[in-house]
Image (cartoon, rainbow, N blue to C red):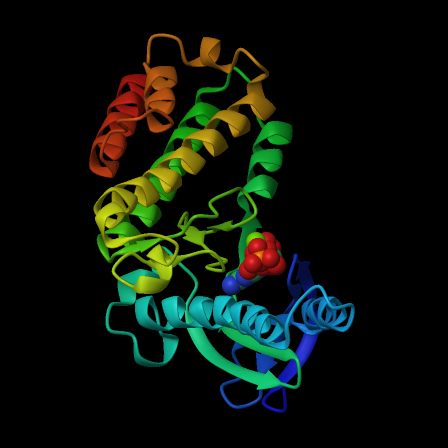
Amino acid sequence: MDNYNIIKEIGKGSYGIVYLAKSKKSEREVIIKEVDLTSRIEKEKSKFMSGTMTENQMNQNIKKFQDIVYNEISVLQKLCNCLELQDKKCLEHMSCFIDSFKDQNKIYIVQNYIEGLTYSQFAKYLKTNYKKEDKTLKIFLLKSMIGITKSVKYIHDRGVVHLDIHDENIIVESSNNFILIDFGQACFLEEKYCLSYHTPTTEKHLIKFLKRVDLDLMGDMFQSILTIIYGRHWYRFFLGTDLEELLDSLITDEPPSLDEVIDRLEYIIKRFST
Ligand SMILES: Nc1ncnc2c1ncn2[C@@H]1O[C@H](COP(=O)(O)OP(=O)(O)OP(=O)(O)O)[C@@H](O)[C@H]1O
Ligand SMILES: [Mg+2]
């Protein structure tokens, strides 16, 4: 932590705390995700002490928790490393890796600070500041769906699935980028880790399935946002646009490609705007 000055706490998750901080070296604002393994280690230790688990099993489980965190670091580092940006475009779609370090039972992941609202805050803002019937509101929502789809497409095109897409894991930047954060569940499809519970024969199907999980999560998220804003019969406000059918198709067995989703949303916006 010596290289950073903590400014404040900005988030709390299942694994630990997220801080806003300033790098002493670059003076840049960053976020530091602190993952505290203590309680998990204690839990495993008590199972060992009570005799329900062998020492070997305990060590394996503890290693598994660490591996999950190191996997998050590895995905970020390979896909979007702030220190050696191979493709600056990643910054339009996801948070980038800056640094990581371990201190006792805590692992820290430093990433760029993305200024903006989480998607859930953004949706609340729209709900309170626009009338339901307002065309601008509908267009904002449709554009946000395109932005999110583009970010998911960015990572899928590079072989990564996110697997935890929801309205707290997307930040809406003022430049209207929809940034994916929290790669805690994400993985590279080509890596064994991603497919670790399966045999090679099921891998081919699993790869397709894992991408579908992301689409399913996107579909669910879009539908629940529309429900928050418009109520249960949200599709009435989009009558004649086939949005309902498009969102339904995301959560079915044969979802469209992400390119098709983007095309269809763009078409719906065009029809709204004329
Ligand atoms: N790069 C970032 N820029 C700005 N805010 C961020 C950033 N990363 C995280 N946050 C804030 O911190 C919150 C928690 O971060 P994150 O989702 O990564 O952790 P988490 O939910 O605890 O992780 P997990 O789901 O693995 O438990 C986010 O919802 C967001 O509000
Ligand atoms: Mg999260």
